[in-house]
Length: 149
Image (cartoon, rainbow, N blue to C red; front, top):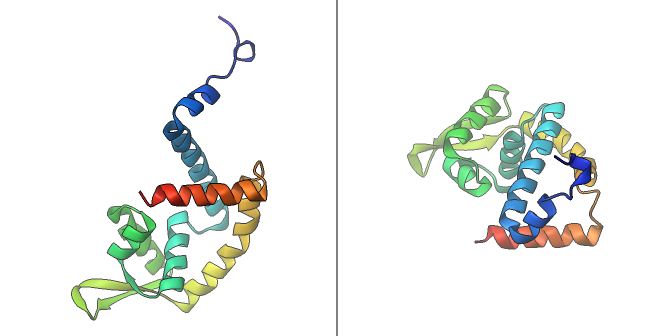
């Protein structure tokens, strides 16, 4: 049996034939990198995204956060629980729908978000280093187009 170094790599061929598989593998790799980065900086990826959205959009229900950020609803409950325990968000009854809660970022949550955001540019530069700035912009546009499906 030939060694790994003696045979041509198969994945590039597969990626050409099946861009869906290539995207899945790239996504998994990027998710692992994002989780590792987040772990080093003490704020989970989901937590970071929730704080970022709440800071930008204002108070939201967990359902809206889940839908907009594409985080499973059961996972969102845990993310919000952890953020609330840390003092980064608070939950209040939604005045428009007493059956739901509005999640609101706190001042401490904004400070934590600001700290976390400082590390993102260098993380993105390192992660996407193989791409030129134009390729990175093109990738962002193409992924955005696919996500509107």
